[in-house]
Length: 79
Image (cartoon, rainbow, N blue to C red; front, side, top):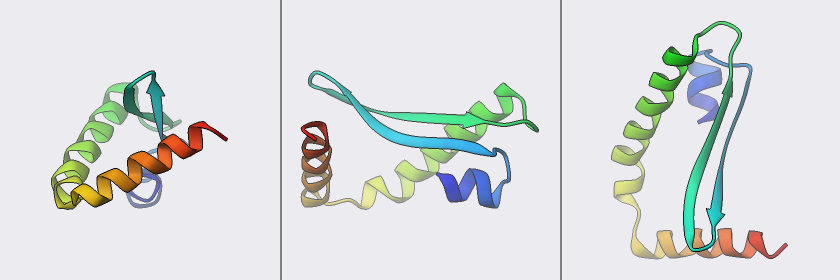
């Protein structure tokens, strides 16, 4: 996320991507602050990043990869 939007596209100077959970529901957070691009442009670029990421990376994950990621997030919650 950082490499794509900040380094390659040079859209933002401050950004963050991370995971969150609300009880049993897990989600992703994307924060982007830009002084050069408007909100609609940034939102479109984040949406496109997600589409590309799902198509490229998530579809190639095995169930073991998913389980390891979920366990890592659960472990982080208890710290």
